[in-house]
Length: 166
Image 1: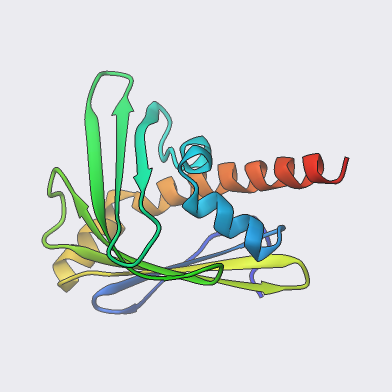
Image 2: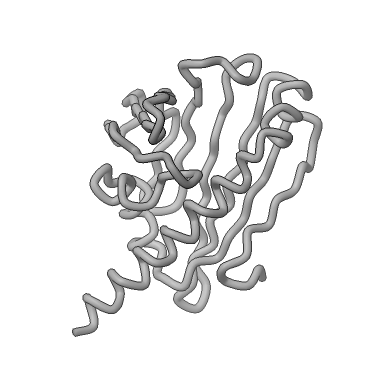
């Protein structure tokens, strides 16, 4: 099993990126943090200098989500998609399409949460329409943004657990 705190990134096929990380928290708490807009805004910030300004999610099959970030210089980055599968607290699949098309086509993101010994592993599989799209994402540094966001998620989860035990 992967150690808590380390992001493992693989490219198992020409069109996929798989990112795996273990969190020291129960699956129900992790699920809440990845599906509740008020909590998402606290950790899903990506790179330094960016702030999440819009976070909306209709958590049901066929529901949509919308995220927007604003950079300190005023640049806005937005994305959204449609939820194709929602199985609380273990699995969610959604399309991914950025407003500024920086990779060709649409992505499909599947997040699977598994719990063992009070720790939860998130396995996020991103599937793209082409090898070119996958390679563009790999070269973009997107995995660094995920790693930073997941570090903030780990802090949020630790704080939530500490508050719950008092």
